[in-house]
Image 1 (tube, rainbow, N blue to C red):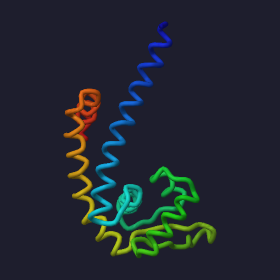
Image 2 (cartoon, rainbow, N blue to C red; image 1 turned 90 degrees about the horizontal axis):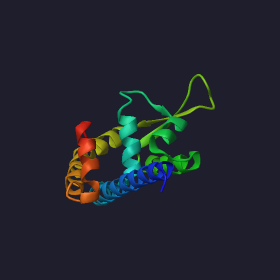
Image 3 (cartoon, helix red, strand yellow; image 1 turned 135 degrees about the horizontal axis):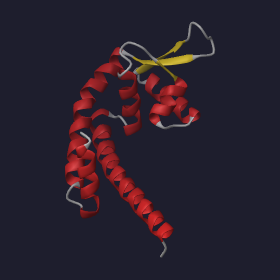
Image 4 (cartoon, helix red, strand yellow; image 1 turned 60 degrees about the horizontal axis):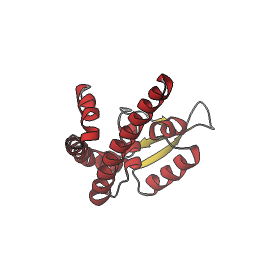
Length: 147
């Protein structure tokens, strides 16, 4: 195996470990958020992104980037959250084609209830992953960054 092959394997191994850690965390979050708040991880991500706007709103394309979704998947997600009255769409005054989304008071309340649970589950998932030998150093590295 040459140097280039070794470098490729190191990157691939790192990616596999990162994907495994992501999968563990996401499964824990999905289970708890769904059971307690009827929210998927991606729905929580949208509420979180909108909650950080401090009274402002986000364009649909910004929301798509924040949730790592395609435009059509974002539209379907926004439709679901809007039907639950967790967010609302607002037409842009400057550009009538522009559509913004913002949290409703119900959406903000649900997010504020879910956030501490999300944070606790994330903390516990990282603590659990710390005991998996293949993931321990990755978790340590993340925790060194304040996570």
